[in-house]
Each structure stands twice: as C-alpha cells, then as structure tokens.
Image 1 (cartoon, rainbow, N blue to C red):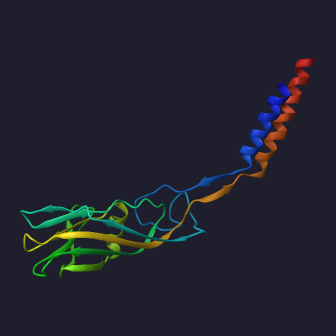
Image 2 (cartoon, rainbow, N blue to C red; image 1 turned 30 degrees about the vertical axis):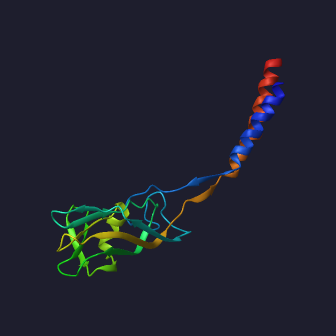
Image 3 (cartoon, rainbow, N blue to C red; image 1 turned 180 degrees about the vertical axis):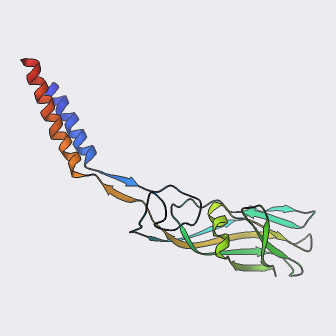
Length: 191
C-alpha cells in the first residue's frame, strides 16, 4: 500500500514539473511599449493589436447643451498604441458645436468642430495615456436639441503577450532523488 502511495506521489510530481508556466508583465496603464517593463526587458514575440470600442451610454446636460461619455480602460500588458481614431455621431448643426477630450489633469481639450452626422478624429499621441486609462469626452452644442448619439474608438498598436516559460530539466531530477531518499529512509527504519 505504501509503495502505491509513493509511486502516485512521484508520478504526480513528475507530471506537474514537466509542464510550462506562464510569465507575463504587470499592466502599467501607459503606452510603454514592448521591451520596456522591468519584468520583460526584451520583447521577442510582439503581436499586432487592433480593437474597436463602442458606447451609446451618453449623459446629456440640458442646461449647458453638453453630452458626456467615456470608454473603459484598456487592460493589455505592454500595449504600445500606434494610432487611435475616435468616431462620433451627432445631430449638431455645425454652429459653435465642438468636441473635447478629458485629460488626466481633469481639463477638457478641444479636438475638433462638430458638423453633424458621423465624424472621425485621429487622436495625437498625447492622448494615448488617456486611451489606456479610460478616455472621457464631451460634446458642447449651440442648441438644446442637438445630441451626441454614439461614439466608437478604434485602437491599433503592438504588444508583447505572455510567453510560455519552460521548466528547467534539473527539476525532472527531483523525482528520482525523492525515490532514492524514500528507499534510504526505509532501509534506515528496517535496520
């Protein structure tokens, strides 16, 4: 009975140690890019990143003729954003209607004029940190019957996915060593 238990333990140890472990880097909420995090100094397997985000969850402030919305943070380790395009659909009439993004300091920066319908704005790299941490925006209209209907954000870039880390071969020697120590212990008990 003890031999079966020992054999089962050894087999489970051998099977457990012959797999691979996953190694990744911690998300830093900035566009640091491949190869710049302390846990991943060199990126050898960079992968293209392309994702679209959509929201029609828009809050409207009737007193000031403003519409507010936001996108969630992007949780992709080591993402280096190469381009970000924000597309909005409004009922603007083009008369003193503007679109703003909220910076990390809390201030809104104007990125363009709204003419109504669907419009796209290519974001400068200065907005990439806000894209990573969750982009907030507002549309300010001249009339109270103008609205922001929806917004989408297309992000393209490159990131370093976690790679499989092989377990060193020396760990495989642990199983035979365990068998040897068990045999020595049995001999010592019998003597």
